[in-house]
Structure formats: structure tokens, C-alpha cells
Length: 80
Image (cartoon, rainbow, N blue to C red; front, side):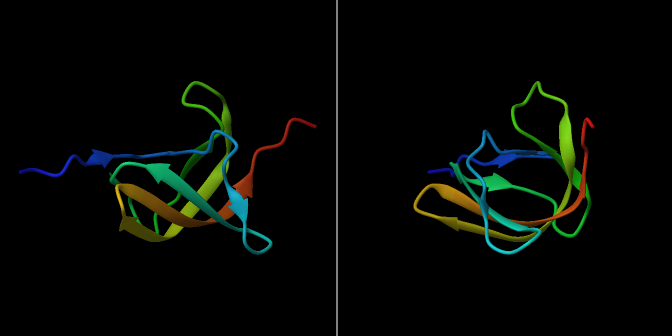
């Protein structure tokens, strides 16, 4: 029996991220997902929205058919 696995090249939060420290966030996603570690990638609220910023993923955990990401926001795109 195989394990379904999704490869992602951006973080899509859908507003579910939780701040742990100043620039450190945790996000839980349904299913098993693979993300690049220690490489800057886009952060978006939805798949079709503009980029909110750039983050570096520090840790990926798989457990009970879910993926937990710990990422550090390294730049924030603002519309001032």
C-alpha cells in the first residue's frame, strides 16, 4: 500500500498559521506534504493570492495523516 505524498514549493496558509515567536510560525496542513528546507519560498494566504512574503522552513513533521511546518518569515510584502 502506498502513501499519498504532495510536493509543495510555496506555503499556503489560508489564515491558519500560528505565531510562536516574533518571526517564527507553525502551520498544520492535512495530508503528507514535502517542502524544501532552508530555502526561501513564497508565503501566500491562498493559492491565487499575491505573495505575502518569503519564509524559510525550519522543520517538517508528519504524523496522523497531517504535516506540521515550522517556518521563519524572512521578508514581508506590504502594500503601504
